[in-house]
Image (cartoon, rainbow, N blue to C red; front, side):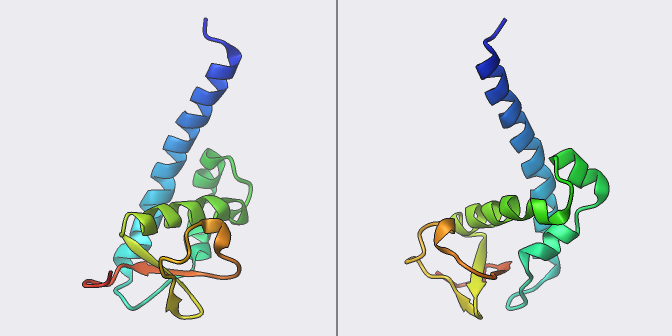
Length: 115
């Protein structure tokens, strides 16, 4: 029998893998539907989650999903798949952490030819 601590870590990993799949699918839907330069708010992704998806993620409301969606968006920005904008401007490389972002953001598919 494995120690309880190892089981908890494994359960968290399993949860995040399943959660990430649900969130990635919903984020991909929005990215596919909006041609650059059109943008969308991460809250649109969260509000697009149905009750079953929220329950599967362990969330009570769409607002509970926001930190995970922002984290996923940051990962996708780092891998070059999307751009994060604030006040209409693409965040540049001087923004090195999700914690550096204060206030509302918008997302869009990375513009072809953009750095």
